[in-house]
Image (cartoon, rainbow, N blue to C red):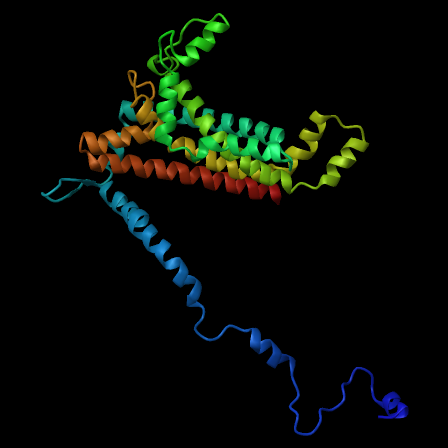
Length: 322
């Protein structure tokens, strides 16, 4: 092609393809990246084992619990429809109201304690050095230890005599021995401390992930403006971690409402019902007293309370974002 022909050709138009050579079109190139027909089921194939397990061990039992909550369960004799009698019976029970109050107190204490302690730990161990990596791993250890081992460990430390580990520490500062889980006045607080000790490291790791997402330039600008450490935490760190706080609040609250193993192993609801929570009450109604219908009604009420809490937090979060 001569210079004049090149100048005369309109700009942006490619030369014609040679004879016998097919021209590539963008649609043909894009067609190679499209999925082959029928490949939509491949992700579901990988998810199928987990979905089957969830269906069999979670969703089907949930449906059965809802069905049993409106029936009088009589094994080998056939269930009888009682409607809302199970719900009215458990709501009017003094034990249910007491267990609900203990559950709320325990959930609030564990939620606030684990969030505060987890946030403080995250600020202390934030960094990239090897020493901090070891400290983070050591701090996260209570989360991976089985809850039964944790409960037995704290039961030993809560020994009510003066020879107990925690009572010896209290004796060093001039305080008398405490009954801890054996005293109705301190048993619920003692269980809350155990839950905070186990839940705070999990919250710490989530806070660390949130701290990594905060722009470092905001801290540098705050230092240039003369902001103190407290002011940087209040005006930079906390606003940046607002979504993390919302997520962890829901997780910690659900963890507090569903507290069972530590209560069951440490006190089993005692002494004198001072640590009876909804989960232990439902367990006793269903498996010790064989009142499966009323126990199912209590489980449904606990599920609805957890669901309402989660939805309210999400709605408040969206309202603040908007």
